[in-house]
View (cartoon, rainbow, N blue to C red):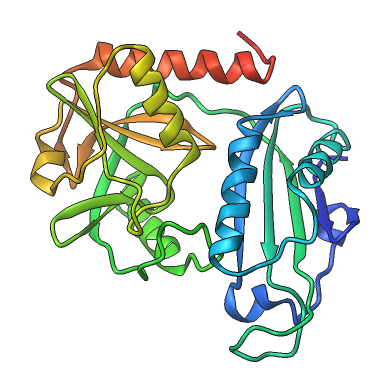
Length: 282
């Protein structure tokens, strides 16, 4: 198959899959999700993604009807049904199917969704442009919910500006991007916002921090301002689908590119780890 969908045990080509209109994702975006990539049918950082999914489910009082191990096995079984060994793997859990009420329905099992598509990792060394936007999202940014309209709008504005991402800021504190985490290098230190309720604790963010430590680059998880962003030696953007990118422009102003060797070392180490752990191409 070229692509594949899964819904509570039923699966088939994406354009043939159907879901109940009373799934609470349709009315409220009432659910959580994860996404990763795979090489040679191996899903990258699967344990970290599964752990975050279950942690987020607990925060929203969603009872996932299968164990972590069972969910992982379902995902691994599904990726082998696609022709391509390199895939974008997306999965989500919604609160269930019930008549529309704002309060939680009782005795309603959660719904499990999976979508799989062929995927090719892009060139992570190509420089990117960014714009900044005030962060007006709800104060649950740490939970990877399905309520993504503010991020969708921000991503569209970035696209219209010819930029890769929109950088959110709140009260002059840089938080994250519309669908990525943001880190900066300054004076040899890798800085990123703390994992409080204003940012998503990204899987790739954590991996880049680990790699920095392995490379003996000091890590500082404290908030930084817009001015500090513009004065950074390097600006890094991380997510599960692009790994780690470097930006050289913010709001049409040249930025970063003062420590390219350090940024490149982080990217190369992450890319090597990605292919090593998925037994992919070197």
